[in-house]
Length: 136
Picture (spheres, rainbow, N blue to C red):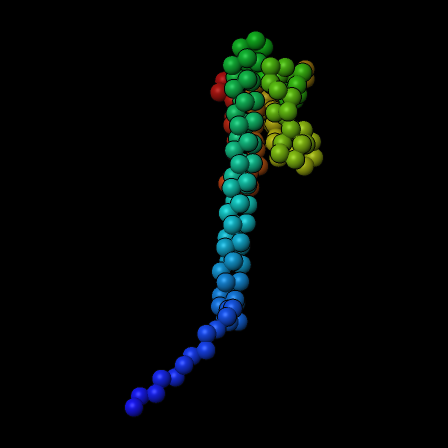
């Protein structure tokens, strides 16, 4: 005669099952926050590139044809058609100020306020610096 061993029905989870679930959730949350940081850094880099491109195109298509030179500094007064917030980086620091992520470097400047060239630079988080130089 075969004896059947009755198993007691268990209720709840074992410690191993709980640890596996906690480990999976921890891994998923680490992955989520890492990807979230990568996406937000890429978005900030794109915002920086957009601002530099806006300043560059305004310098080349508006300022240079009107003045036949480039300004010594970039401000909302030298480029009045550009939204003033464009001159602020993602940390709200104006272009050219100490820790700004934007740089405007004029070249070939004379004693007055005119320059023959420039380079615009954005310091990016996930790529090399984004640089635009004058066309003329």
